[in-house]
Amino acid sequence: MSHTRTLLLGAAFTAIALTATSTFAQADYPNKAITMVVPASAGGTTDLAGRMLSQPLGTALGQTVVVDNKAGGNGAIAATQVKRAAADGYTLLMQYSGFHVISPHVVSTQQWQQDDLVPVANVLSAPQIIVVRGDLPVNTLAELVAYAKENPGKLNYASSGNGSLQHVTGVQLEQQAHIEMAHVPYRGTAPALQDLLGSQVDLTFGTAPPFVPHVQAGRLKVLAVTGTNRLAAFPDVPTTAEAGYPGVNATSWFGVFAPKGTPEAVVNKLVAEIEKVTAEPGFRKSATEQGAEAYFEGPADFGKRVAQDWASWGEMVKTSNIRAD
Image 1 (cartoon, rainbow, N blue to C red):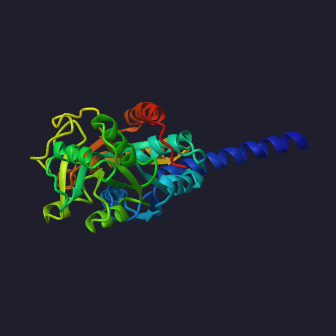
Image 2 (image 1 turned 30 degrees about the horizontal axis):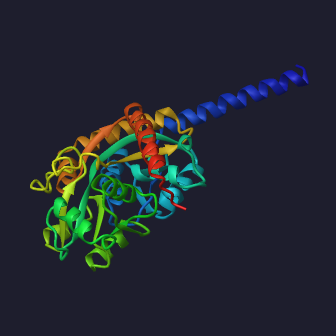
């Protein structure tokens, strides 16, 4: 046998062996702990989504799913970590729509791109709420707008960062209601909430879960829901459309992404188990009580949603000239 033929056969056997090993590894997935990277600090809705999913998903897969909070950079720190991880299904991202389809439009440079990550499944959907400090002398959105017009430039609103969905929602309200407010960016929802509770800021926008207990305790007031339907957690609170501002509409999604190149078999296994988890009555009840909604979408439908939101929010950011830096 010639030396060349020996080398070719050796290469062929190596390729076959690697393929067989890879196929076995996918069939055996998962055989170790999975890391769910969350691009936010503990206490926000993104963290809640990660923790609501991780325990039952781990049980279904027979392995621990560890939540790893990596806040900062408008989600860029977490997304970059997952982008650079091995595409084997052991590092996943619980992504927040604001970080995925808004932040990239407002940050001039970042270390990750849309095609670095592949959609696995949407998990939760949640509209923003407009929430004010308990001692602000307003009880409805109409009263807030009137107060802002009577006190131009006096109101300030907190967000989880420049270019965040909260920031963009604030701009929407300013434009729709023809008012001016001062924007105060924070490094996440948790510190913004603390200053709202301490009356350091007047109002904020955000998904309901972090605010629910404080509203129930009377320390904060919800004026409106920015989605198309009222929330079960606040059935008496009108939508922004009902309050006369249909252009203020900001519903967030929270879904799982994986590094580009993750094997289809691995993605399919994750999708199947996530769909079962989000259909569980306990999961759905917990989401509703927190002011969110269990909302499963597989890779195809979720991918379409991401693309549509990318285009629509990108246009809004461009026309409003919103920048994060």
